[in-house]
Length: 158
Image 1: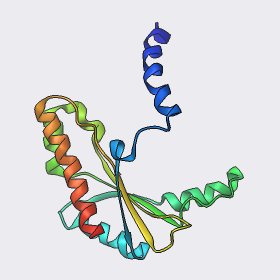
Image 2 (image 1 turned 90 degrees about the horizontal axis):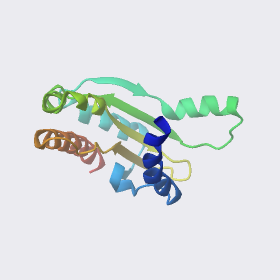
Image 3 (image 1 turned 180 degrees about the vertical axis):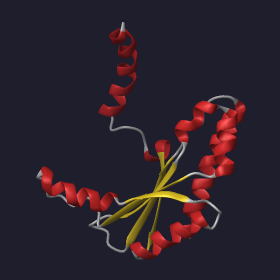
């Protein structure tokens, strides 16, 4: 029974994987700016907290990959610096979950800030775009999530 349910899913996703996946604009938004990682990182923190939003967690992804890469035998440096900020907006999150309690899966929000080893001085900012799904109220609230994330990143990237 489970295999029968999974087969249609495989027929949808296998071509995507073979074709290299979706275009970045389908699942994420990406900006980049010239500058120092520390300055852009601090600007991102201020852009979030300046809206009265509390940052729940800062994931030090670059450090984690560097630290664990040695244990895995991986020598490639993925990032020069990389962190992700995790947060929710009480207002936007409430609207999203009032529209559909199952929208809880879209919270918390994450914005990543990172520098690639071969692009020193170029800082990247990215976030996952929420799927705009459900009722009209759900779609509107999820669009508000994307708008909030985009506003924050654009403020930093300008």
